[in-house]
Image 1 (cartoon, one colour):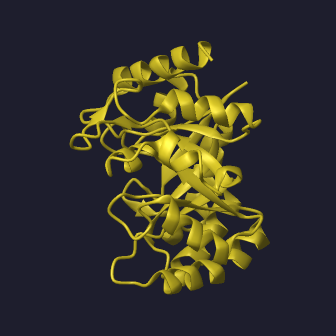
Image 2: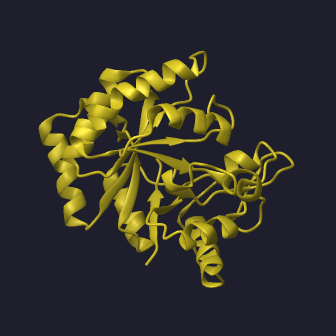
Length: 253
């Protein structure tokens, strides 16, 4: 079956237990989390606090498939600690923040290259997400980066809304000709409009989600369809609507 994952941020539920409850209500076992839980970074939690997080996940049959790093990828010490914490929590992947303004792409590549052995030592994926307002705003810049840093651990979080914000067709203009198809680990189920980048419910924008899902699945995609609170005023009901709309797309493929 398909792999769905969800990020429940603090606007919807504060604290890991409440986030778990939201995922349980929506029948999801795969979670994404930001580095900070209850306002405290995983990197500064002590052993007892980390064990409490781990035990809570086990009791509720939840797995962390992605931890979003909150510091620039150039902060090696921070990510070294974050990968160690991810390992203790049996997390699958860490997203590093490569949107480092004022830093050259060569320096970003060097920082990621330094982290790759750390990720490999823990067996954890090191993922990078395209961002319309960052140095990694398009497929060209992502491809140049991956030529320098691609390993078994590295992968892509493909966010079609960030391409739509630049008035580029995510499927026809980006994915179709991309050399990173096999590197995609997460597809953000984010939709929006070319006109001004305004977020829209899945299927109501220009993110070409149906086409992307179809071609990924035809390539035996084993990654995740990722739901995030990209819409304003997202709550549990809005999440359920987002998921149902996307499921309806999948049923027509």
